[in-house]
Length: 453
Image 1 (cartoon, one colour):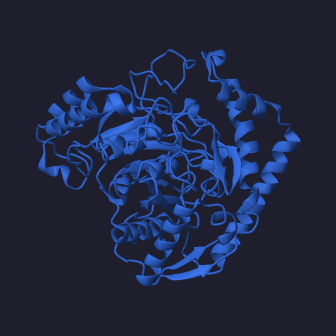
Image 2: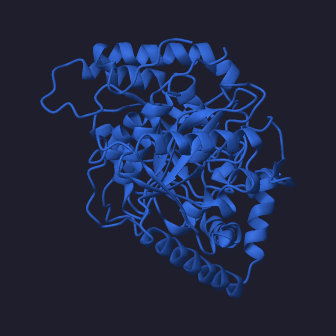
């Protein structure tokens, strides 16, 4: 594997060299991993050539190649959504997040694979760079795999039930689901209007934040965009664990972990405590309602969005997505309102938990390491469950509540595959979550571990 360039160290190369290095890495890895739905080689090189010329305001991401999940519109290209049934027309303008990336000088290298319409966690045909017989997770699986394979240092994903954090954790990289509404979703195919989040994945917390700083902020054309001021995401980068009060919720978050994941999580908590953090057992009241909330709310909202689209061929969707949309369409208005009431109870439980005095809540990101490619079920706490329900069990609470959630590499399982630590905060406390995650990242020392190929 070639040397990975971070957003902070890539300044030694000019834009053309950076793009050529990324394209060379695609040539080296893509046949095995299949992380890209499309590669914009000619356009990326042309933009990089233009950026060689002196610029008055080059932008903080000048010359950095970035990959974009294929549910974001990129002007002049088809938004494929990982689906044979997606419309054939080309996007006429960039999604807002992509527009902001370009304005900051980023070079859009290509579009990464996604589980069909972001409705799953497998992301075929993409393979996990750590073991080609394992899934990369999803639905932003191509973004996670492209970063792990050293093609790019950062990429865009989306997260409805964990779809940024899941591939980041399974591929051994970093992913941040911001507070709900912090990043515009305009020009991004929807899954669930009140659960969807757009956000970045990166090799490190710094690489992740480099994108977040650019794409965050109010968008009046997005009805779900927050008008709250954008925080300084680096404000707590130097605080370290000392003085942090970290909550651990044993019920729900810790009682169904695979043994190697449980051991890695316990080690992570002890590492934070040894570095000066206070560990506080907490209760997250009604958190167990989250899976059913997501099933109902996401199911109804996904069915409603798809019903409004034109040019699709739903008969060409995969069986799993067809079945999920049918289930969503079958829910009644009474079911949906019951889901919203349950959601309100979960949010109240979250608020009470943070009011108990914790700064962040930590958990394993996923209860097991990456399942085999093609798996449809996994073991969760000794029970066999559908892979979606097993993989997103610990990530869905952050979507139900809208709270920020970050995953950073924490170690490796008995099979040598990555395990992630998830850090969650009160809505709006992204800076605290990112600062705590960066402190743990330095302590854990798992970044840039060599891939086995």
